[in-house]
Length: 338
Image 1 (cartoon, rainbow, N blue to C red):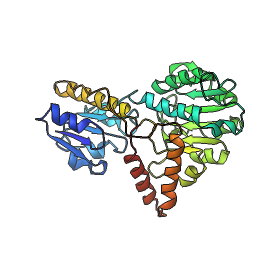
Image 2 (image 1 turned 180 degrees about the horizontal axis):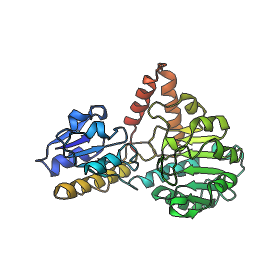
Image 3 (image 1 turned 90 degrees about the horizontal axis):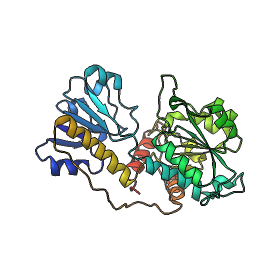
Image 4 (image 1 turned 60 degrees about the vertical axis):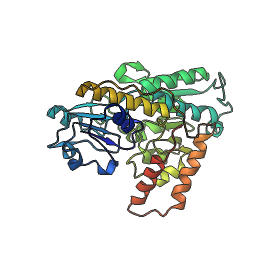
């Protein structure tokens, strides 16, 4: 049996068409619980499902796939101890996230003209601006190429890879700082609150902070208190976001930077490959050309920011924050892939 999050595109259709004898259960994320996965061989989730001992104890699950780059929602230590294989999809939506950053850099003039006279509107016209890229993996390396094409000075920071300058240099020198790291709490280079009060205090007063990585990488209370301009796609405590942080953001979205048709297709393909390998099924190859129903015209992020704020302004928000989470999740679930 394969249990999947029903909102992972293309997955259910592919399994039903190519592996018709497989028992498939496509569930709401909230319905993926210990009882639902007890007899499953494979579990396929997104970040909204916490995969831990409480979910997996006593189950037959032998492979966990997450159709996401990040995997901080998976208790990898527990999986290893129980002999449960797991996989994520690094790089699946890298181009989509890069496109999101390029949208910020190239079309949202006000973000870069509040304090600067130069507009990075095309090749070479970003000369004079310095961008710091923290995390130089699949996404960060693509962002570096875009920034260089725009004529920006690029500084990199990725200590685990031994790449680039210090975080202090990034803070001191850069006009735009964008984060593209995983969220980690331990190890030699933990990233939790990497952008915190100490870092922000070293930044230029007019620095623009962008986070399309993981919410916990940025300390939002410190960011708000710093008075710096910022763009957020990922949030601390999602989906229970801080509305004050939303109101003061120059641009905001609901963790959809990587939500493109091809990004989703790539993640699903990687999950299908892992399932076929683990269970000995015939490989499935998804199409590589899809129509995108969403808004991708210049200025789409400004329009999305307005829509997001309007939803929270027009809805009744309970003090316990439940309605905040409901609105956030509804916006995210109903976002049309670009």
